[in-house]
Length: 212
View 1 (tube, rainbow, N blue to C red):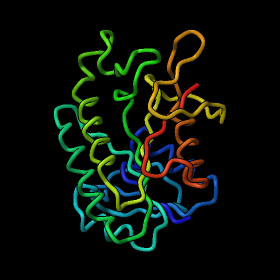
View 2 (view 1 turned 90 degrees about the vertical axis):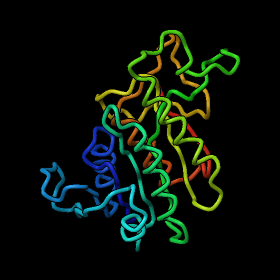
View 3 (view 1 turned 135 degrees about the vertical axis):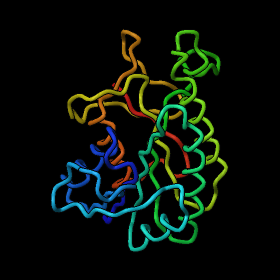
């Protein structure tokens, strides 16, 4: 497939690029600053663009099968997430390209929690509430979208660099926890889950999650 990745230099985005390249896909990594150093091999095409700009999105979607967005705003600029979501949806209208979104975990419901979300739980770090709320708004924008072929992937509660094992579970709107009550997944395995969905679509116009 021809895949374009927004947020390609980020923690998750860079792993999505690596996973897609390893699977033989043609990858375009989108950077806001074309002069910014990047870790990508020569096989990766570098393009300049901004997910907040519908014209940039439309231009970068031309000839592509799939767009991936793994952007994360800096602290204090969480409102940019909704702006980027609207830019992506507007720019993709009529292009026929599919969109895979790396979202947040805060809106996942707790197991047995009667609908209480992770972000609503007493132990959720206050410092993460702004980005969790922004991701919740992001998901709401996608859930109201009926034209674009989108999929939203929420990670587990703890998303950190680690190993690519390829061994994880999938769920829908409930937080996945292990036998000890932990909810984790490596960034590497989240990229695997995303590319699995890209190659074998199973969650069209809906959210799913991945975890150990």
